[in-house]
Image 1 (cartoon, rainbow over the protein chains, first blue to last red):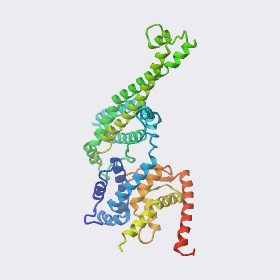
Image 2 (image 1 turned 90 degrees about the vertical axis):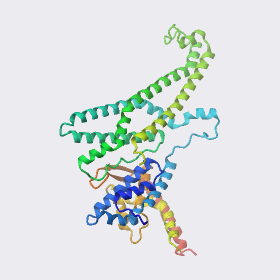
Image 3 (image 1 turned 120 degrees about the vertical axis):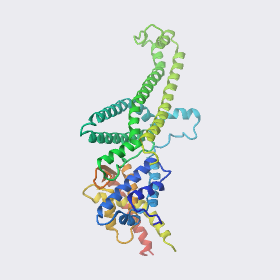
Length: 311
Length: 119
């Protein structure tokens, strides 16, 4: 093709990477993965020829790096358009009030809230896996099973990283890898371990999994606290109406001490209950916005720690 | 006249046809296939100049899977990265029937003018 046609798989992947530079890191990871699958299979299918000879023909079969890059760009643009959930109706030209409450029409706000609740469970699981895996790896290091155990442990963290990425893409729409990172050409175990130890992503993945415990606790607490306060306030008018009609006049729900509930009942003030109700709706709406923002920020954090930088 | 015009025409044609061909290949296959295998089947079936670069089928496979027309599973491989095997779904079969009808109609319509059977 051009003067500097790739002479090896690594060179091809390097050129493909630079042809895709500026694209989403996750898209690049997928494209490199696909190309590597093909190129290695092609080289393996021609054991009589050298890698350079096989690569010479690649431009006419698989396509030159620039052509392949263009194909991924085109398809990605189409898939993104097709898979993107429709924008919340009238969000663009809606006024501030409409946009504020429009969050209830946004699927992602609900999925984000769900994700915040889920992080407590996943956070505990990830943290436990990392702490157990690391300490067992250190403990086993003096035994022969230390090396395979460490490899398996890192493998598990990569699978988890991929799964977490898929989950976050579903929740927030942030593009995440759809393929695992390829471990590279077959090599001896010692080289593999050395590569893993040198790979910054190995450590940032572990860091992310550790971080998930405190973050999960914070997210879960925010979601549960704000949601219960908001909902409790929002139903206040109903309680007041019920009390007014005598349905809950002696409701044991509220004791005589100075809680908000007994205040409403004591004063029989529908107005106060209404104000509290509006406040509750505002709190829940703000929570939806907050959840969406937190999930989006968290997805970015996850991407910076789980996806190879500049890949 | 250089052949860049011809290549562009071929590329425009391929935009939808590659997806149709991939669905057809997977529907006829009795087993799951991975990207490289599919690429080689197409290459064997194709005489002369390749109609499309094999590298372009991978993103289309991913798009079809994302649309629910294919399912996939990953199988480890000695030759390189783990391979992703694809299988057509019921939805994919229905889509293939529909697309095949459209293709037949289009083909006979175009032929009517190119072959001059309609005058």
